[in-house]
Image (cartoon, rainbow, N blue to C red; front, top):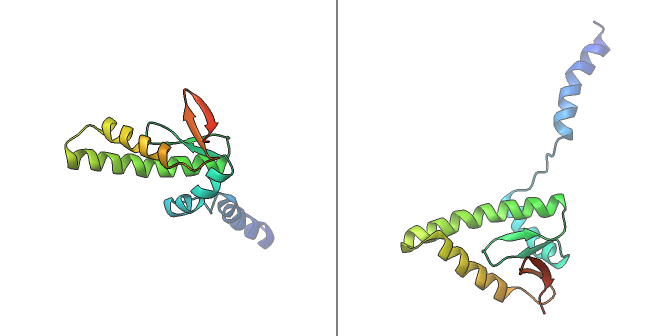
Length: 117
């Protein structure tokens, strides 16, 4: 095997690894991006206490997943701490989230995404 072929064979896996989503979003980045995603109409709040994807987009889906996972863990912690059902915490959080949603941002009402007025 020639030196050039050997180098190519060594570099190909490295280049492939670099082409993977190296910049995969973490929770901190998702939290930082949430306000902009809401303002762009990509994500919205739901009465169940979780975010939803309004417009399908990879970043929106990643933001929703990461933040919902964190919310789910926090709701479980609060439920256990207060000896109540997780569903009750989710409902309370959802109510507050809908109330706190800024005008013009999306909320899920009766199965439809609508801009809060």
